[in-house]
Image 1 (cartoon, rainbow, N blue to C red):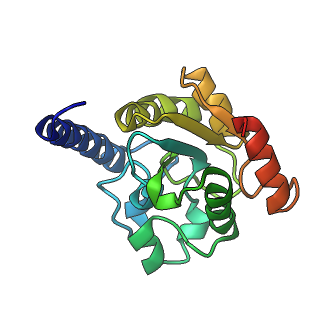
Image 2: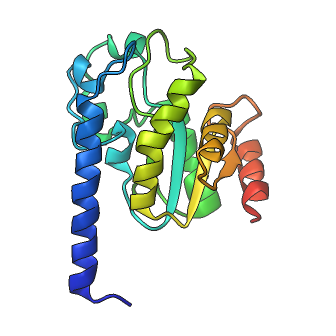
Image 3: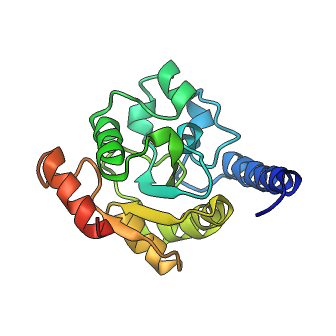
Length: 198
């Protein structure tokens, strides 16, 4: 077991590397995409705003497709989103909280959460992202941050994150997105338990 000093040093080194990756994300300009900061948010210390509310190292990590869209963010800055990195009352987030609690006996704050695509896509929340852009973002950001987070298990929520993580060489478990129309919470719980062998 590492000494407390070595553990603190390791966490500090990870933090510095992570902040550098986050600052790279926030200053990058990919043609056709924007940053959360372009809409009045300040998530410069995070690769994905989603991680602000869930950045526990060494345990479960979840990866979703993307954080938001231009159309959604034009509604203005939501103080709750700035504070937690997500809208707590959103159906997807509420269902995710329930699944984490009922299946894994944990909370959102006790996992690591991120997105395979950390930039803001044009159009609405359901707009597609060209596959080469998803793979590039996954390779340049998500893979690196997951290596820093050292998760014991990575859950890909949705087809796009699973396919992208697999393509870039990240081992993960495929699960439906919490908003997938496969049935209510009980059906989602059943699918999670079966996929995780619980």
